[in-house]
Structures are given as structure tokens and as C-alpha cells.
Length: 501
Image (cartoon, rainbow, N blue to C red; front, side, top):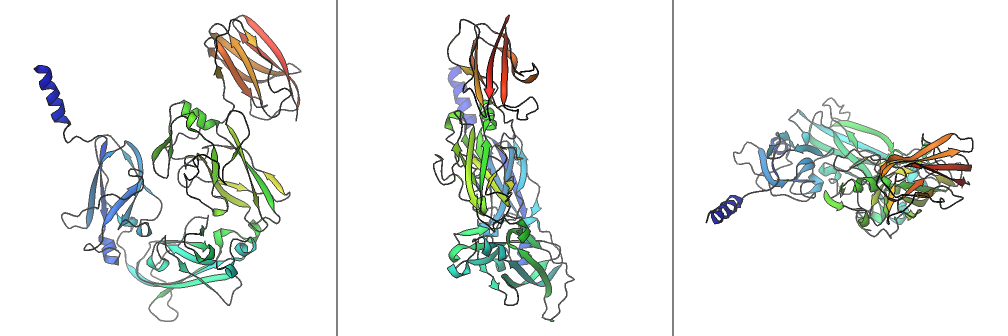
């Protein structure tokens, strides 16, 4: 009977219980009401972020009519979340960058109230803004062809720029070569609040075939002291002529160059071996939890072409890299950039085509040398640019120290490296029938120590270690004969290998 009562008590306590933390969001919409951006009678506020896969939430409520809208979300994972407030669940009216962040602790969390889009009440002014973009480089490199229907548009936060998902076309300025312009009037703009925007190429005029600038968002900020030279009631803000993506004639390659990208993902192997998970930062969900789930690597972002992450999970498509080793740790990708394209290219890797190498904005850059028609980019270490605490990077990229092999040996052995001769890496097998300290060292023909590959305590077993022809400082060594020496138990075994470049 006592056991039955205990079970009933536990079940009763469980009714209505929530698991994980609760987070209460607060956002002041008062100023957006003044600006005419938010009508409480017809509009609503929601939150999208890593806590809900960047999808819509329930609508916020303002129970006391003080213009502060509130929403409590249950079952939020403990840790850092990123999020944005949105009007009417529309990304075109969402807050600008950067994402908001909050460190969720166990229990109840209340995020202090802030103004929507971080816009506090300020004096207002009317402005007339001229934007100008020089498309010369984009015409040269083939990214922009008006004769084929391509147009250049401006996208930004305000309605005059169509929101971030809109497409407000710019027109060719007859007084300037290859310069496109747009002039807009803005009423009641907050003094001191920046307005962000970007120029975008729509291939064939298609809003779904957009080439965004890879440079940071552009902005202008009203001061309230702008000159009104034509006395039309609008102070003038004249933005200078800016090259699309900030690529100038000094920044482009002068001949076609094939760039070979290289990446080492042994860092991901180490992270997964430590029990970490490679989340997809686009959704915040658990993506890859073990090494046997890894299918390959994709590259994204070349030429500003940010295709949808996660659309090639088997890594067999156009942007999939080619594996160059037996272990699945080294990959390469070749891409030909044509004359007139930018020397500075932005890109990012993703295992299984997911956005799991680094957080938002942690993109890579390569500066292409155009002195030859082939450029070998330095080898990248997967995750080395990451600053997102939700990802287990950066991690060391190096040959996996020691890999345990099947079987139980009966004697100490040191196998012949393979391949031999080798370039750039080789594998060395050794066996130890009893547990103990083991040291594997590489020497040159002068007897000088080059690198120590193993120096640790190991259980009895068969092992394999890779050497990438580097010294203890990580520098590549010269071609030639090398001796490798195993010290285990009371045994000392040696063998020779040849590096041939």
C-alpha cells in the first residue's frame, strides 16, 4: 500500500511539470508605435532563435497596456541562446544584426526589457537619401549582365528598401559610368539611429536568384542637421559611390585562376571522440553525434553563392569536397575564378553540408594570388575560425596521435611504415603485449631528434600512428632517410623510412 501511495504521489507531482528552464522575454514596442511600424490592433510580436529552430513562437502579450510585450517559453535548454524579435513573424521586419544573446540558467529566467530593434525614443527628422553603387567590376567578372535581364536592387530594414526580403530596383545614372542610384524620402527618422542596407544582384530579375554583397551591412545615420538644399522639407544624405561588395579594380584577379582548397577535419574527429556534438547552427539542432555519421565535407559561400545548408547530406553534389586520404580526414576542392573576380573570397566548410564549422559571421577568407593560373590555398583546420560556444571548436588539427587496432599481440613489434617511400604522410604500426610506457621517435640520419609521435602510457594492444613529415615545431621536413625508434618495456626497436618529394 505504501508503495502504491508513493507511486501515486510521484505521478501527481509530475502533472503539469515542465522540463528544462523557462525564459521570459520582454520587448518595448512603444517607440515602434510612434514610428508607425507597429499597430497593436493588427500586429503582433514573436521571437525566433536557437531555442525554437529560428521559427515562429507564440505571440507576445501586453496585459497592462504599457507597450511592453511579454512571452514566457518553457523547456528551454540551459546554455547560451541567440534570438531576434520580429513583427508579424516576418523576417523582412525583424530586428537587424547582431543577434541578441542570453545565457539561460536552470530554473526561471527573465530577460530585461529592451526596445525593439534597440531603437530608443529620439528626436525625429525627415531625410532624403541617395545611394550609389558602381557595378564595373561585376560587369567585368560576369556576375552582372543587364542585357540578360540582371538588375541591382537595395535591400534593407525600412519599407523604402523593401525590407530584407524585398527588391527595390536601382536605376542607371546617365551621368556616371556603370553607377546605379536610388533616392528615397524618409519621414520621422530617429536621430542617431543607423539604417542598414545592402546592394543585391537579382540574376534575370528573379528575387530568388540573388547574389548578395559579401561585405558587411552598409548604413546611414540621420543627425538632424542635414542640409535641405532644395527646401522640400527633407534634409539630404548623399552616400558616396561604393563598389559592389567593396571590390575595387585593385582587388580583382587579372587572369583565370584555379584555386585548390584544402581542409583537415581531424579536429572534428577529436571533438566527436570527446563526446561532443556538431550542431547545425542554422537550426540549433543536434546534427552529428558520432564519427560514423560523417559522410564528407562541402564548401559554401564562394562568389557570394550561399546555397541552402543541409541540401547535400551525402556530400555528392556540386560543392562536395574530394577525400584525399584513407581515414576521411583530408579533403580538397578546386574552383576556377575568372579574370575580374575578387582576390578576397569568402567561404565556409560544412560536414554533411550542414552549417557546423563555425558560428554566424565566422567565415573564412582567402586572398588569391594571380601570378599563376593555379593557386594552392593554405590547408585549413576545420572549426579554427569558430567563436560560437555551441560548437566544440577550435580543436587541434594534427595526425591522430595513436589509433588502436584489433587483436592482442604476443610480442613487441615495430612494423615497416607504409607507404614507403612516402609523401606527404605515412603510417607506422607497433604492438606491445603488456601495458606500459611507450615512446615512438623519429630521427634524421645525423641522429638528431625530429619529432616524438608517441610518449605515453598504453594498454597492451596493436596500435597505428600517422606521421605527416613535420618536425616538433610543425614545420615540414626535407626529403631523405629517417629512422624511427620504439621504446616499450625493456625493448628498443628501430626501422628506416624514406620521404620523397
